[in-house]
Length: 74
Image (cartoon, rainbow, N blue to C red):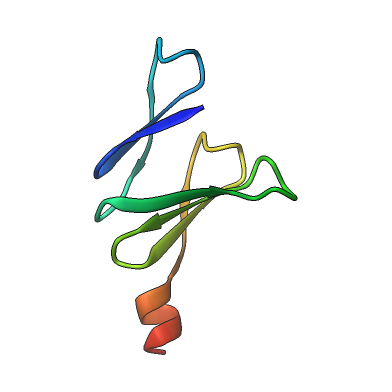
């Protein structure tokens, strides 16, 4: 599985033959992390400390939390 992009993010799981648009973040992603205990759960972290979560192995992402506004400056 490969993830690519800067603000528009794409996913490929077929040997790079095709790419699917999965996420349009406000800023570039800095990390994509897979949950070892739940293989279908993927987290993507954007530069502005926004955390996105996927529960379908990265097919779709939802905004999960903004660490800067929700945690650091409540």
